[in-house]
Image 1 (cartoon, protein in one colour):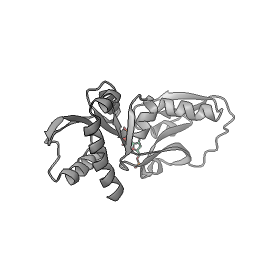
Image 2: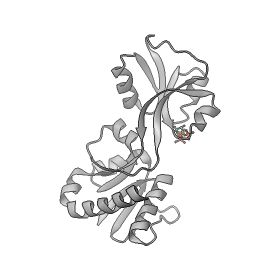
Image 3: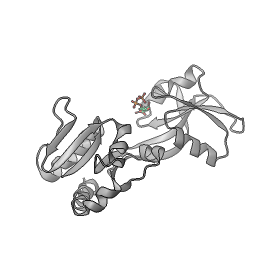
Length: 205
Ligand code: PRP
């Protein structure tokens, strides 16, 4: 049996829809259930940020998680397939009309993605001070907590509705299938066969 950690919400549903398509049966978490066994697979319904933890520890053989989370956590996992779900960008946001002097020391950046932010600004030799938040990042520059933000942009609505604009894009992200290293070797045949099915559906729709 393969155990697969899915991030709660829309990506879990879209991932399970792909499984339904492949195996021609229903894959669906009932009510508030966090674990489901169907057709030789066990699915775990976990928080987005926790998917890699289950996979790294081997409690899940496979997981589906955003590339942004993989990069942020610097994970030691095998990246198998871009699922082409949950596409978004990680971008720098600034208040509309604000001009930032990038050579100024200690630009204040609010974000929940500390490592992606650090690496990006370090590679551009821009000195920053990071203000770590867990959510509602767009609020920070509005009330002077930070000069700019680094956050996920999907539709762009949250930035727009809060009077922010994208100053620069840092990276594209989408949900990826990842595998625990030991599982990959111990259950190679099962994993490759699932990978091939998923790849076929992802590529052909
Ligand atoms: C994410 C992200 C942005 C928003 C972007 O927030 O942090 O705030 O979605 O989406 P949009 O471009 O389509 O508006 P989320 O809803 O996960 O909430 P939180 O970060 O505030 O917890």
